[in-house]
Length: 280
Image 1 (cartoon, one colour):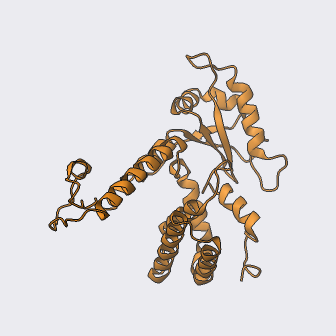
Image 2: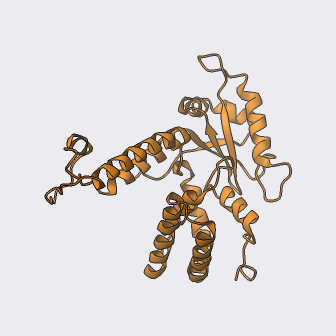
């Protein structure tokens, strides 16, 4: 099936390159089953996907996420992903252009901030500890139609298994992660006539060339601390420009407030402001 498919994705290597170029993950990020699960769930934002296909996407995405948490074998996930690709090829491929446009317009809020992920992991571990404590309790608590708060759960007796909040709490936490990540990212648009305009097949990597030139200019513009702003990563957005990720939100704010830094890097470079609301 994959050999006969059209488009730039032909194998695992080109698939990773495609996802990186469209902003689905950063080049320095380590891909894992949880990341693939989130990418599948994000595709549900595409319009006109048949309900049955949406159900398949959700089912496989949750199966992959469950496999990652329970250390299921990689072969089971591979078979599930292959079945998903076969079922959805006829409905997903016609929406490739829409998917690309959606990814480009939402690059400012893509998932996974490394410092917040660590905090999220600690929260999940505490949740698992509470869950184990509840399962080991002997007495059963009376049923209640009202979901308790986290403070009520922590204060509940050891013999009373607590009920847990709805998944909406986790969704809010993910939204806060996206907002925090957006504060450390900046979308830079380049004119097609500019020498640093990213094009397919360029060598060396256009993102690396742009980052090196920007770093050399940032050295001349130190912060109040005396250190220059630091750009951790630069991702190519083919046909548009570059997505910058800084070490700290203040670095991105500094660059945004000094447009001369970008024009010194490339005459046509300018900041693209987000044009969509953040949904909580």
